[in-house]
Image 1 (spheres, rainbow, N blue to C red):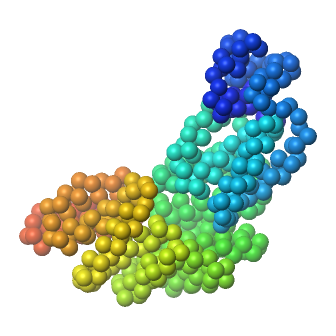
Image 2 (tube, rainbow, N blue to C red):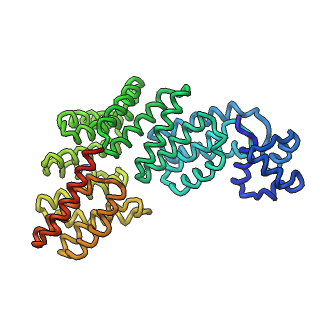
Image 3 (cartoon, one colour):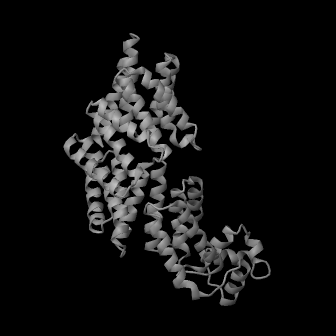
Length: 422
C-alpha cells in the first residue's frame, strides 16, 4: 500500500496547492509536513479531511478496475502502439487516479516517465523524475525496479549511456528479487543490449540481445525479434563478421515485412547501408540509404540519419553533385524538426560537408575543430570522431598543412584506442 503521506504530497503538488492551503483549518503546517514526510501517523479523521479537500475518495471499490486498466496501459508502453491510443488510455486512468485513493498510484506515476519519453516530451519526463525523487525513499522493490529502468531510459534518450547502464544494472539487481513477467525482463535485457551497443561493448551486446531474443521468440513477438536481429547485425558488423551480420539484417527485414512495419524495415535498410559502407561497397550502401529516404512513412529522424550517411557516401566516391543535392534535402528535413538541439549531430554533419562543397574551408575547419569533434568526444562517439578527425586530417594534407594533418590523425588514432579499450 502506498504511504498515505506520500500520496497526499503527490496529489497536493499535482494540484499546485501549498501546504498552507491544504492544512488550513485541519492541522498545523508543521503537522502536515510531518504527515507528508512520513514522520507521523495521522488519525483516520485527519486523513479523511485532507483527502476531502484534495477531492479524493477514500474508497477502494474501484481498486481492481484501476489495477486492470493500469496493467493494460503499462503493456501499451512497450509495444509499437498508436500514441493517440496510449494518450487516451492515460487520460482515462488519470481521471480515476485524481478522485480515488489507490495502491496503484505510485507505479502509475513512475510509468509516466516512460510515457513522456514515448511522446518525446523530455522536459516533462525530467520534471516527473525530479518530483518523484522527493519521495523515492518510500519506494518498495517493484517501484525501485521501474524507477531505475525508466530513469535509465531517460539517460539513454539523452545519449548519457554510462549513467543509463548504471541504472539498468540497479534495475537488473532488483528484478532478481521480484517475480517479474519474463517479457518485462526481456525488455530490460534488450535496452541493456542497446546500451552496450552504444558503448561499443560488442560481446555484451550480443549476450544480452540473445537473452531477450530467446524470450521474444518463445512468445512469437516477431517485432521484438526483428529489433533484436538488428542489434545482432550491428554487433557482428563491428567485429567484421559480415556474413552473420547480413543474415541477421535479412531476418529483421523479413520479420518487418511480415508485420508490414515500415519503421522497422527502413531501420534495417539503414543498418545495411552502414554495413556496406564499412565494407567499402558504396553502391550497395547508397541503395539502402535511398530506400529509407524515399519512404515518406518513415519517421523524420530516421530519414535525416540516412541523408547524413548518404551525404558522406556520395562525398567519399567524389559524386559531388549528388552530395550537394543530399545536403540540400537534409537541411529541408532538419528545418522540420521542432527540437534541432536534440539532433545536433545531423546539423554538424550537413554543415561540415556543405562548407567543403562551397570551399569555405575556414568555416569547415572552425566548425569541425571547435564544435563537432568536441561534441562527439563529449558524447564518447568515438566511431564518428575517427571519421571526422580523418576527414579533417586529409583536408589539411591537401592544404599542405602537414603538422595539422598529423595532429588530427593522432586524434583519430586515440579514438581507435578508446574503442579497442572499451
